[in-house]
Length: 225
Length: 265
Image (cartoon, rainbow over all chains, first blue to last red; front, top):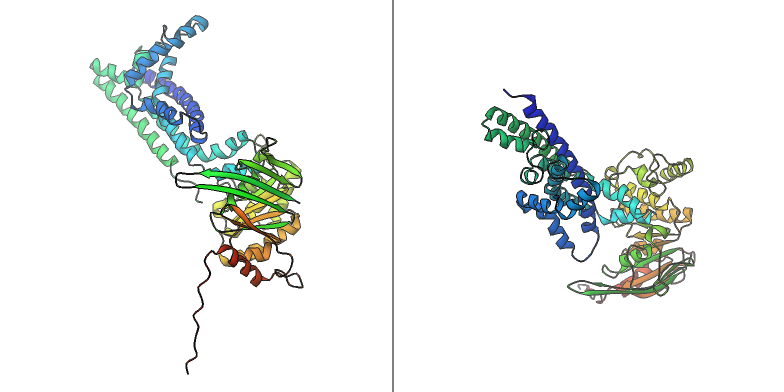
């Protein structure tokens, strides 16, 4: 028998973790993509490569790096624990950070392409019409790039949903607390609960396919010029 | 309105360097910058608007210093109070015609325009024959409507000068002559000085008071078109002498000799 605990608790936890991870990744992704797309500074392409790195690195390696950074003895983790009493390891917040890092390149790449696809002329027209850089960004650049960014954000949400390696390294697999869908699938198979595994796999697949279809629609061109 | 331009800018690329070195004064209300492509016409206009920063020089419009490299003055494009008509109009594709026209007056935190501003938008929409198109998007407009919308958008903040980058290039020839006349009327109505880029002699004949011939990044010649031989006694433009002037200045190679036709006996 499949109990609701075995399915819904990991499902809800996964949606929560992936949701927050997407918000984080999208905010940072927009900021860094805008800088790389619009500013000319030394080390621009190096920064771009660094930001893309999580896409090609094994998630376990990323997870290890994160442990070194935010683990209790880590560079940032020690400060967080000493000053604020926060420990990210083995918490769902830790899972959010792991998923955000892994999902980041997807939204970053999409945002960079979207910003680079916005014709400079529109921004220049807004400037000549007396608009500050901030107003140019929120009234012209962002609305014109928005669909591309949203498509990237949806892909990164799908990626965060399926995150396994880095999450396991940082947050572990505590049922009800840090055990997300993909980890629950692994545990179910290990425990020989094939019916639970089947159900979880189908739920995950449906969510991911819906997201891919929706983001594909968003990427279709909208403005005929 | 006096326009004083004296700027230098070098653009470097792998293949070749281009140096723009233009210096001119334009006292007339209508100036035409004429020259072959690659002469630096657009670059000059963009520098005046503040979209391109010259390496050296000065830009002064009506006594207001917009750029002065020695004094360290470089007024931001948003503060220059110039209107700019882009070659393909650059209407915001995500905004309706009305939102485009109102763009210069609307602020991001306001959901609705103040009454005075809204009235001005309605006035300009009416004047530029855009009535009924308030909620249309730029992609749905005809070429002439696009140009009118772009003009209305550029004029809504009452700029000190209107810069037009090949305003008729995107139009078919029939429409071109009509929009040219409209532009002359617009100038008279708004009393806004204009500086127009063109490489169509027809534009020069209809619009020009001062003609600036640009070639290889330099002002080859400044011509006053308000006097003979470019105007006849009644003040009409003499297209033939203007055409002659432009042909001599721009074409480097002499025209081929006409074949002589002999009468067959």
